[in-house]
Image (tube, rainbow, N blue to C red; front, top):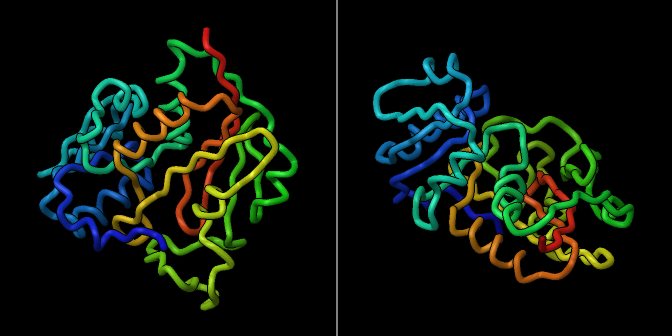
Length: 226
């Protein structure tokens, strides 16, 4: 079952990476759902940064991945909301591994694509998957049992499906996106650090995914110690 924002009413610190359309929508929703939380938006474009400055919202003019690399700890913030057009978990992991490892993206195996629902191939080593073949509403509450559009049970929860992948020599690692408000997902720093630690212990090629119940992004790569 997917985690829900109702379990996170005690959030005190939220970082939103990106101040574009999705970042702004996330900010508006989170200010309502978590009125006591200190929300920080990290946006590298100066014009967007200026427009985001309001009461009770911190705005940092910086690249999101670089900011995570420099300032994120296992306990701060409570939650990260990725709202930039990159796979944040992968890019942060790659940045953390790079000093000691050579990272080589590898083509998504065909047998993996056969396992994914409605797969879309991205750049080398990247793919997207979605249980739905239609545009989901922005305010989807992600109910555990049924899709609010089709009114039918989901065939499975995508983050669980990805965790169980058995694709050749690849080892699958998954960050589950936790719903914080309808249409807004995120995860804890602890989840990222635990992921990094597990990957470092692996000698296999990696499938690194971030997914909620319905949608996911996957990066395939190999890493070799320098």
